[in-house]
Image (cartoon, rainbow, N blue to C red):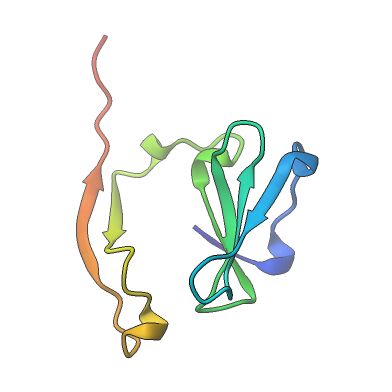
Length: 97
């Protein structure tokens, strides 16, 4: 999920966030310093946007999405002539208990 930089408000746990920059150092990735979960990042491709881990949003579950596209995670579009490499799709199905 994407949001404008001014469209994200941390309501709890902001004091526990830590950030990390790797590779080109342009994107800033945020993680919980207590449990290690990735929460969001400032995009390299559009620094005016955050990419957000929807599982960290109150009232949202990964099961709310029937399909989630998976990118290769290796070749960033900025390093690959703008090409986004989709390598598959995750499908979530609830298990019957």
